[in-house]
Length: 479
Ligand code: GLU
Image (cartoon, rainbow, N blue to C red):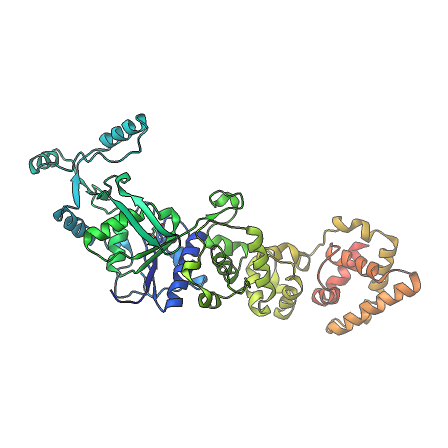
């Protein structure tokens, strides 16, 4: 094994890329980046019933969108392929046989019914269930007999009973009593490997040096270490990350909000904000500055400083962070990203210049891009709903403002934003001097009539974007 750090992310394509898997991928990626190592993508699709091509594609696309590019993987290849477990089925049986030959594994002919009965017995006696080792010492004759009955054996790993100690990269020293682990199945009777076996064979053959994953896998680690030891292979370093919990401290699930990266993107979260946010689930910047690019995070990343406790996924904080990213994005790029969220409107009625202006003047309060549909609706809806501003537009003073504006509109140069700005100034001055109206009330009347809202983007720019015809039509409609 070379000294080079080799890490991997090994998602199962039984769902779209989960935000928690994205965090695990990120921490592996950061570790590789920081150490000049390699980041491998392996698809664990041995459960063919639950895996799908669409989920696999979603995993590729989501990781790429987050900027977590892999050095080796199913699509880019590499020296240790194939990188999909389903293409590696021929590899596992020979290692299982090797373990049988060395006395570390044995064939088990127990039927499901027999195993269920064992489990029930354990429950009845209030014991933790471990397999009885009923098949450990079957003679060749007994095995032949069972085989003749048509029973296909699974292969079980014979667990050596001892205190197993390893130094977790994140959690420090961990101890396990392996006598509590029953002899577990490594090859199912249908000839497919179980997760614990396939993962070891793949990580071993792919020269993976460090395995960083969620602590939900911690109970698998002793089993995997025992297999490495039995195979005479070098045991990789393990690091287990705390779990990501929902704000109510339960497991993050769809009822709390989006959980798949692609769903967050659909709702209008920026991938740069998402990846920045998930980095903070367990890692803290040394300078306290939370908004950072992946490169900046990588430079500051130390795996042993990752928190070993659980992190809470605060959607509010993600919203705040996403808003920060929206605020500093280049307008043309932001406009490209926002347009799909305006797909229900006819955006073709505005020039690109005006569309960019709409984005520029409405982005300030956005936390997710999808909010633009509501926030900028008055630019696109032909008939403005005045229900919310009825009180404002029905005031006598407002009617006067609206009427006066309609009468003077011909003097406004709608090609010139500056001129509109000045005309609005004149309007405020006129009503202040002649009618004693506060400048803000003059603007209020216009805003209400033109947008159906009492608050919103800059008025001069709004008027310029709407254009003369729309402004005139809306003012008349308000009267
Ligand atoms: N396919 C496993 C998962 O998605 C991989 C676990 C591991 O990293 O070993 O949870």
